[in-house]
Amino acid sequence: MTERPARKSPTPYEAHVVHTERLTPHMARIVFGGAGLAGFRLDDYTDHYVKLVFPAAGVSYPEPWDIDRIKAEFPREQWPSNRTYTVRSWDASAGELTIDFVVHGDEGLAGPWAARARVGDTVRILGPGGGYAPDPAADWHLLAGDESALPAIAAALERMPEGAVVHAFVEVEGPAEEQKIVTPDGVAVHWLHRGDRPVGEALVEAVTGLDFPAGRVCAFVHGEAACVKELRRYLRLEREVPREQLSISGYWRLGQSDEAWRAVKRAWNDQVEREQESPEPGPESRAA
Image (cartoon, rainbow, N blue to C red):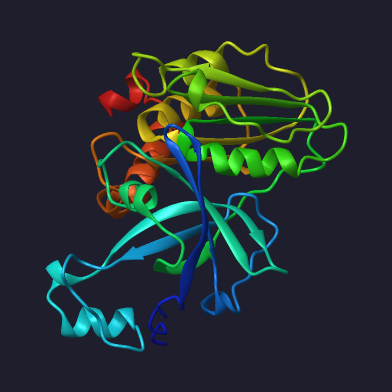
């Protein structure tokens, strides 16, 4: 039996902050650059993501930076933490990477870091990954998500083919969180204001209330896990959208850190898929 090769750790890029901007009260934009991004490349996806690596408090790591060495030589509580973020844009000619961060005061790790970031600050970046881009052969497109999916939705809108039919829904806290997004002619973003409602409730209501167009849809639905679970059930079971036409995943889960969610996300998604795509056994099956 042939042994599987050891999984290779991704190459880290050391990036420097070259520009900061507060887009809305709860969204900060950071532009990264520097020679450390040499060799960074993106494919043709609009949902590219990277992992930002943050050292444990008070811990310094040896150079050259090597995550495998760190994990071998440092106790687990001193390992760095990762946070996953969508790439808003990549300017290959300038070597600049733009990432938008949701910021809620001191809540979380990456958000507070982004709120305090200054030109010259450094961070290590792993990646990129990705898997979705608008299908030019689709009859229409559905884009739906909360703040966490907004960068990918905005990137998708900017890449839509001419004449595309698009229904885009973005749930945010309120009017102050809306952003200016470049959209194809005739396409508008439907901003859903959450207010005091539970996260995702307005998004589920909007998508399930859509007068579903005929034809082949290319759908991108991402955001809080419970909301995404409900929309996945609706699209796969009620609307019978084939899996290959649907990019859908929980970017985050209420009450869990990014690392905690990533640790269980694959198993959680597999379980949801089994629950939603396996028919409920009938009386005969239960009695057998």
